[in-house]
Length: 101
Image (spheres, one colour):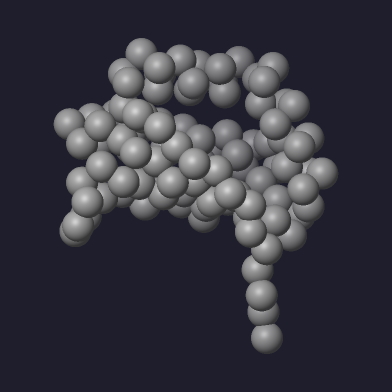
């Protein structure tokens, strides 16, 4: 299992737009085989940092998702929405594996 951890720097005046973007991607990640754990928006503290977490059974499954994502019309629309609204200023992506008892 591999979890993708995304840290976003967002425009604090466009949190609603980013929330719309996030809701779209939760559905799309699920559609393309992942398990989305949600987007986390600013509440207390920094007003321009948001997070997202989603899991795939393996890194190979994630890579398959990335290939499908590049040709999926809905995914391309979601990217265009973020680009048009400029709600995302930058992001970092990391991959993690869980530790269970």
